Image (cartoon, rainbow, N blue to C red; front, side, top):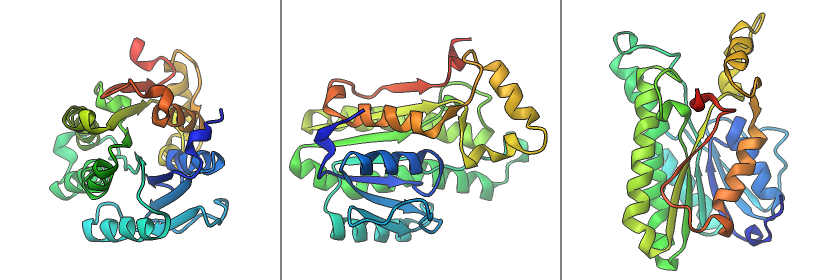
Length: 248
């Protein structure tokens, strides 16, 4: 897919070092966009260094570090017109009685509150231009139980609600906000499912109507569409990319 409109636009992506965030970063760079990439891990060797990329190392659960990283990226590449709030962390499927308060707070800080911080940092600039697009990463765990533990499921449900309210509040001022809800995507975050005899990964594929895991690039392709002018009338929605998991 080619979207010439992205050429010269600045895109901010969290969780850019691996998985879906990495694929999104590659996809937007491939479209000629400038990318502010943020992750707590150093820039991966297979992410090409270019003047169109500003890579910032920051833990998105740390408000001060995240804000500094965003502002440094903006100083270099300009204000973003597109934001992909992609950073996330699983919770090992812990039920509530096996979840400590510290674990709960870390998952919510990483998965949910980071999106609030990013949004509130860049939204004023978008409103000045009367244009901005948010593609927030939810999950099928934001629509049904069983895709994570208590903290992860709560965070992903909250992301959907936050995104809908964000769009409702600012749609009349040129802002669009939507969610993507991935199912089984083969990424480093799910590496444990593929360890050993990959019994869990095999089971997940067998339970998915499409009978396979998706690649992160497939989510990146969906992101390009949702961020493009072709999706201009799509507001406050949740788009599953789950191989049919939710249809069961």
